Length: 300
Image (cartoon, rainbow, N blue to C red; front, side, top):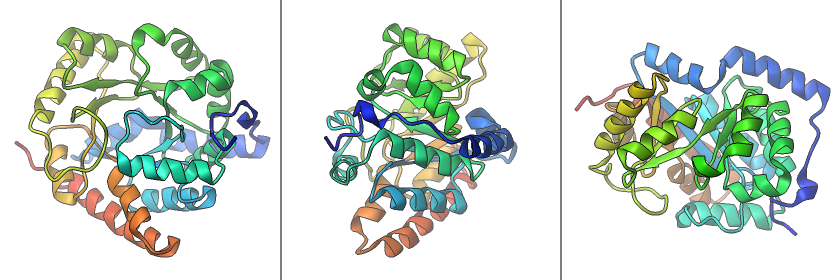
């Protein structure tokens, strides 16, 4: 099987790699610290997403390092899965390419390790099935050993998250859940209570992908989520994802959210490039544009 969820993908990170990742994690302070540093600078954090194994395993590592160097504060590393039901066509194309290339869970952890070594916190974004198949405790252990900061789990509900919450607590990992436009205030508060690191606000209904404009419901969703954060007393930052593709949009979102999350736009640069060096150059330019955008927020 080429699917990254194969159980044989379990890995043990070497002692040297673990030490390096621990050192990087200490320097960065984790996802919450990255958001806090951005806030102290009067801006939003820039969070970038790419799937492991895309365009190749080594190419994904190079791309993530470029994104860090050009201004990303946090990197989301996608775990490729054969049924990406919540992802749009751009991410699906990238995930398919990674799976065809034979990406394994071990490659995801290797990518995490490489990002952690830069001092920028890496999160793994994954559907729940691959984690469940790997073994929740084993996944948490190996993610922590690789220097990972935690998980973003778009299809996992708080009601079903017991084993993950327990494993995350045991291994000191962040747990990021999603709130949506359709979420009630009560639901948002329930989700906020189980989050650590930040709260992921999905600003568009349906699947992911770039958009020409920022969704009009996004500011209200962030406002409602911040109200829930205030009620719980957690102080968690709120990152807004789904649709941002330009510096102007990043500046707009930075005016009302704590973090700007970008995925499809980064992937599109690599998909459209004739070769990896060109793709990395285009990726650097886009990251720099978005990083400039979050530094010049347009306050509503």
